[in-house]
Figure (cartoon, rainbow, N blue to C red):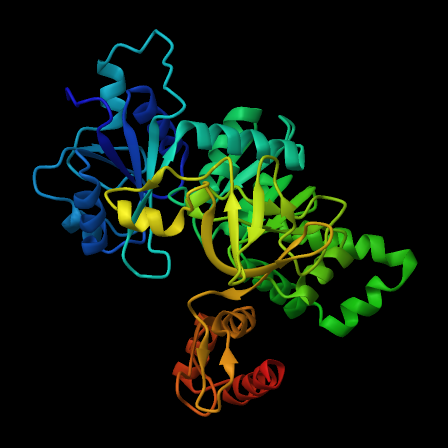
Length: 442
């Protein structure tokens, strides 16, 4: 297509092998990848494509092409990947068949821009985080050293590859360490996909860890399971059966990130013999920041700095991090970049935190989210929201209350609750669960 070196090329699709192949192809051709979430609206996709000045888009596996195709500017070239819906565009297989393969090795300068990862942060306005090759390389090496990843490990890719964490933990790590990667087929087949992959290295968000636990309790009541786990003769068999049912019986490294996970949930997994580790990172540092070291976990913290990471707490209590994965800045936004990067290269995370005497970091809230009630009490909404959203019956929660007597929460219930409410059943159970939640928050 005779594109200028460094051209922005978008990648739109759900996780698949060809998503990674396309990303590598863009890099080897001397360009910059702009990943788009497959859950974007047409308007959201158009905003990112126009802001990034993308000149081409790879379209892969999608659930709703009808909505997204309206967001692709008229005249923008498209390449259709395997598993993609019919787009009428040239197909990947056709191009490969008709094009001579690249024979020479390609070397990109480590300081060159490799990818633009768009994140809304807390403002709602998409920001293009500029990540160079050096950040991707150093983060992948450091992550492998931290958890001792090897070619004997297996990964399953299901968190969006458009997110920095999946790019680090799955794409970069698998390439550097020759790891076998499985891909989830769909949400409906996820449990079967886990059974097929039997991952040795598994990362997820708190919501899924809580759902896994709720699924186990639905089959074996909590009290009964605790009794079984307390019996020496049968506890080993019970633990093995539960983990095998989840597809995690071969998992030696399990990580939770993106939001806090209740300590009791972490300890429950530990009781099953699965050492669940909490980690911490941001798009702005390519998710390379902190993590609990295997064998030396401190529940309630996000662990210690990864190799090459420096941390300090500002006078306001904000966590400042200097990481090997730190971004070059925000694309086309030097003023915003100057606001979050200090003169000596530390990233202002926007999180409040404390560091204990052994270097373990505990996140205590968000800098800009604190508000005061009419009684003069300061409220950290994220703390309450995380507690609410870690309940299996709650999908989303938003805590408000500026100027009111006390805070209140707007809750979007889970699909299960919405189904029960729609047919009029289960209202007593739901009311009882909400009462327990209120008591817990208070």
